[in-house]
Image (tube, rainbow, N blue to C red; front, side, top):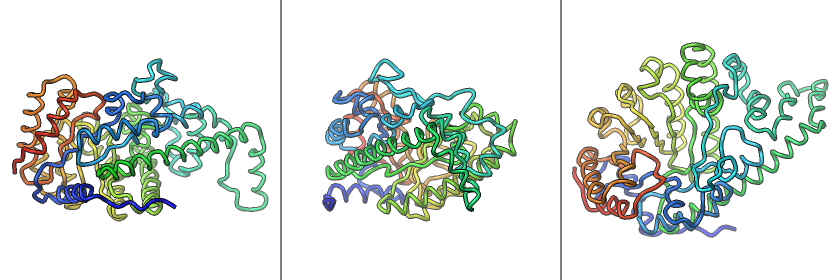
Length: 420
């Protein structure tokens, strides 16, 4: 039986700060919680990247030290670090693991954008017809060498006596080995979930609400990130538009079901991140974005809000040409939007008072700049982003490295300097 969590006054104060910021109400200081991933590992050195990927419990002390020293208003845990324990044993083909595929155990993990991808463009319609079956029979055997046997399994018509013969492959050695690998990977992922939950509860006990309780994919990014790859999917909008759109529409249904099932299992979940990996001005026209990207993203945003969550869209590059549409389609006071490389004057013009806006700080400056430069950068960011309320001070990169004195300058300035 678990110990009941009793929120401290500081925890409740920060929860209120987030709620006030989300609804663009006046606050006594700007909400400050830069997105960190490997920063605590690199800053304190108690755990390297390889060991963190193998078990989040290994990096708990580093994350607690970071939050206790710098006192951000929200907690970022290690969940964005891929769970290498399961990936390694499954023979993952799309992530290079430090200390395994990369010699340096302190290096960052690398996601491989393979030119051939893990599905062919001719297979979009097959995915659209049966996403679950396609992922099981085609994608998993291609992404994980230990799951090659799943190619032989097809349960799509196992609903009557004669169709029971479709279960025969389950007795064959390659299929049996694949199911054993799935069982072992499930145990590894259960350990990962337990370690993650324990760490986030420890951070909560130290007074830090979670910045990200869970994360979901935008439907287009299912293909962009995992199945076809960034460049292939971008080109498929031109070369295979109808097939891609059918697959994205099917993916949207899958993602919405996943969102609703996740909230049903985790009713405590509140803050939800979508790390937006395409749709940027340099890769998509407004017409392409409205056709292939935004409808699925918007449907997922609406599903999160319907379930009582707060969507946080982390736009990783310029979105200037789409700001008017975003402002038109999102509900007031329900979303956090992080913008990188966008024109802040345009962002403010369209979204002030409508959404919590996040960004503004040069993450590279935190690693290579001076304390005085950081202080000025933070003041300039608050001057430009904070008027009208609803400002979440964040960086334009996920922080991997920073000078401690520069981080202290960031937090101290954000706490004491306010402009409305």
